[in-house]
Figure (tube, rainbow, N blue to C red):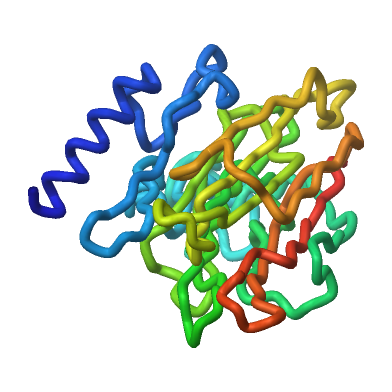
Length: 293
């Protein structure tokens, strides 16, 4: 079977096992919770031997989010004659489109975890715009073998703008790392209206029982976000989503915030082989947290 063939077969298997046909957003409805999924969301490419995330965002999810722009309001700088603020060019306005700028998330703190928590990160990033931070709603990555050691070469983070009225902007994925645009080995996201509050990752072992140089296990914890008295807050239980080719495998980095006003806005990782014996593992994670406001 050629590469296209095994991908199609794997997609069909994933779709039927998960009971959800929208692979771009496997948690599209509140009823389909991540913790109810039992099938792996990644498969091993028989040509390369590496995992491939079947549920990763499609190419069109990357880049600018057009529906997060609004027209300049009547009388704004660069406009003359007023006019309807919801038209593209009100009153002969020559100014640029302005982003919706609800600063509902502010920087809170960064927390390091792992066996070598203070080591330099290989791939890291945050989800944000010129208006501030988005709520992180998805994460994925790839680990590659380089010089006998594992390296986090690709990190993808999905964020959504949370507006003051409780509505959400579209999902935008930002890429980081030395091979930022490479295919992801594992990917997970949460339903709209929810925020990531915890992340764990592990490389595990391959089918031969050898230590893996791949991202095989990815775990996301998430909670619902609501607007209460004009302020965004987290509510309800913490849900868990398991992703990857070995979704319930061992993890070596893990962080969860239980604060009712704190969400992930970014992350960073490093894999390390301290003794040079091939036993590389993810040893460093930085959890970047934002405060709902």
